[in-house]
Image (cartoon, rainbow, N blue to C red; front, top):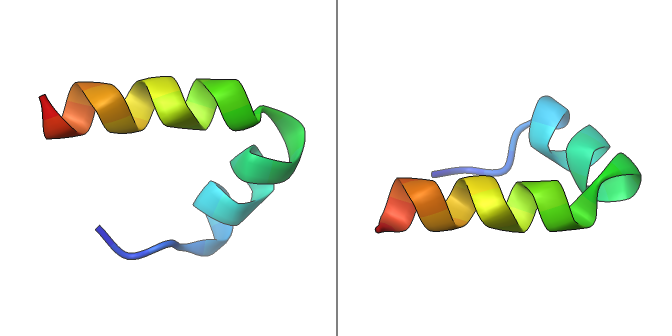
Length: 27
């Protein structure tokens, strides 16, 4: 998955939430 604008915004606002969603996508 490529980092898009929405993902960059989420990284700034909720980095832990982005990590959790990525875990769900990969596992």
